[in-house]
Length: 121
Image (cartoon, rainbow, N blue to C red):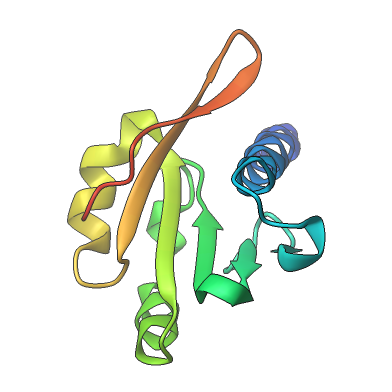
């Protein structure tokens, strides 16, 4: 991947990560309850009080995806959400079946991040 694409991908994933964190705040979680990590790591976001980890993917990350991490999180009692671009939901269902608890689409609409309904992979 070219450097400019990586910079753009990182910027996009950071926007999605921040939007996800804001959505938890809207539902009553305190900022102090939400642990944010680098948007290119797994997990990207953790909410210990509900035993949830969330990872945010771009369409370019599927080939290098380490699904073993998700299985490990689940084996340790954590609920695994993976947020993927809307146009990759089919691939996410195929790739994450048995690894993640939920997949959820994201996309941009009028310069803001939107989220779909969580689905079982």
